[in-house]
Image (cartoon, rainbow, N blue to C red; front, side, top):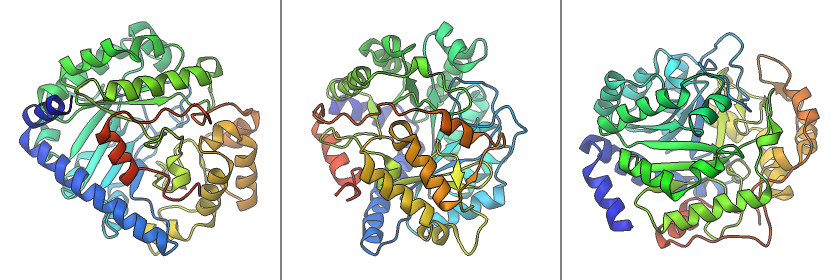
Amino acid sequence: MVMELARRMLTEPDPRALRKLVWNMGVKGVRSVQLYKQRLKRGEHFPPFLFISVISGCQLRCQGCWVDVEAQSRKIEIDELNRIVGDAKRHGNSYFGILGGEPLLHPDLFDLFAAHQDCYFQLFTNGHLIDDARAAELRRLGNVTPLVSIEGTSVVSDERRGRSDVLDKSLAGLEACTRNRLVTGVATSVCKTNIDDLVQESWLRRLIGMGVHYAWFHTYRVIGPNPTEEIALTPEEVLRVRRFIVRMRAKLPIAIVDAYWDDEGQALCPMATGVSHHISPYGDIEPCPIIQFATETVYDRPSVYETMTNSSFLKDFRETAAQTTRGCIVLERPDLVRELVERHGARDTTQRQTASAELAQLTGRSSQHNPGNEIPEEHWAYAFAKKHWFFGFGAYS
């Protein structure tokens, strides 16, 4: 498996894209984690990985979406995006997750990529706006990996995403990416309506045949104005997803990403460990994308770094979450989230201004934390990487 995956990565992507992946994401990404470890010893919490929702607008209307796609589209202006990325770079960061809405609706997004050739950007997209011209520009830049969201069969995709012909349009964007030799991924929010179709070896083999290099499976979150609770996974189904990921990692020549378990199979939360926080399309600094409350913004001075490291709201959120569960505090203990918000007087960061009411309607449910049912990594490479570069960072000790 390792040799075949290595062969694919050495021969399929454009050489420039491969170099940027290895250096900006690989070497510099490891360095950013090491610097984060050093900061922790000084009591400074600035995440090595930032996720930035650059725009709120989107063409789709997905079940469970927490973004204000129905409201007037808002975006972070390019000068502010450059300042955010530039400030993080000065502290050793090199990786940025770019989200929306649909981030490709941002008119200056490619200017951001071009201005920071020493960084690596993961573009979370529905793929509908990727054609050969845009894919060719991403190939020229080399420092962007598109992660195309696919949520099921044609029927399921239309149901999940609130529009028609969704799958065909996403596949067309995906094919433009692989045709132009980009390092390309596919993301799936696993729920009851797609688990039987996409949590399958045959689906991964199809992606490999299309030239996809990695897949990212994450579980559906019950949140937002349309939470659609009935499609959420049971604890047994979450274990099924975890077992599938571990088994396929040791079998197929495609990288498989997950951000919710460590090398021993224990659950973790990236927000609670401090490895990532989120910046909303309005510039609000949030614990994670589904927690739409904040006390600070990127417009606060003197810098994003100092704002984040000095945030009592973020600190309390990390510590309370880690002390409560290794899973998702939003799913398991929405009552504690409400307490944290009230204790810090945090603002509702949505345009719809209903996040507090939505949170109040949630009842506790299970998340990826399932003590006694841990499934450790089987493949040495994933186990090594997780143990050294993606783990609890002392949050749960």
